[in-house]
Amino acid sequence: MDLGLGGRGFLLTGASRGLGFATARALVDDGARVLVSSRS
Image 1 (cartoon, rainbow, N blue to C red):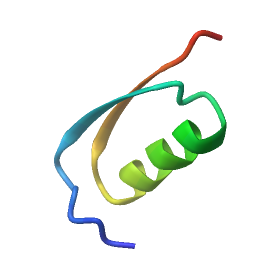
Image 2 (image 1 turned 90 degrees about the vertical axis):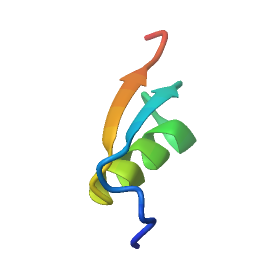
Image 3 (image 1 turned 180 degrees about the vertical axis):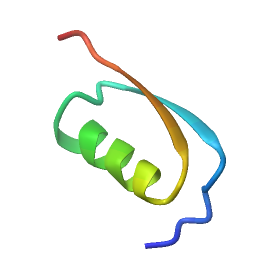
Image 4 (image 1 turned 30 degrees about the vertical axis):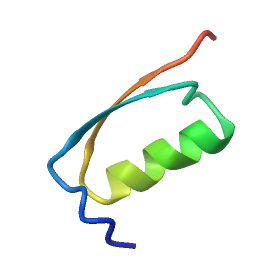
């Protein structure tokens, strides 16, 4: 799916699993730069 977000940067919190992980994966697959953070 082309979200048109390639080349942009994103910071996601709570991205170790579930919805946050899926969101991070979708952004990376679209070409975005993603920084993830979680408690564990």
